[in-house]
Amino acid sequence: MTRPPFGLCLPCRCVRVIDGDTVVVSLPGSHREWRVRLLDCWAAEMDTPQGRRARDFLVHHLDGADDLALFVPAPKDPLRLLSSLVSFDRVLAHVFLPDGRDVSSVMVEGGLAAGEKPLKSGPHGKGIP
Image (tube, rainbow, N blue to C red):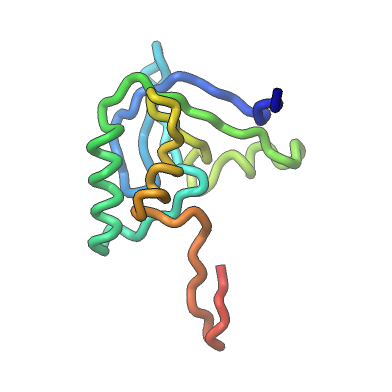
């Protein structure tokens, strides 16, 4: 048997979708809302047709869903716990659909997002993250 990854897995409800790779969730019994940046999912910006398609997909599949799972992986370096879990005031996590599929994987497989951070053109024509 393969050991599961270390981390924290919690049931959650999607309160709203921000864009193609950011959602807002709440935990059962809590009124606090958390912005979640989907891990392994880089959707286009909202000012592009691709970005709007990615957001619309998330709205259709997640908005208002209350039977989702939020998985926050443990950092590789425990001394950097907070900085590795939060980016731009968003929790970095995976969200799983009720059927067990990872939303990020579904987005990538459907061509709605990239699974790796796209490279941007640098001043000398070299790709930079």
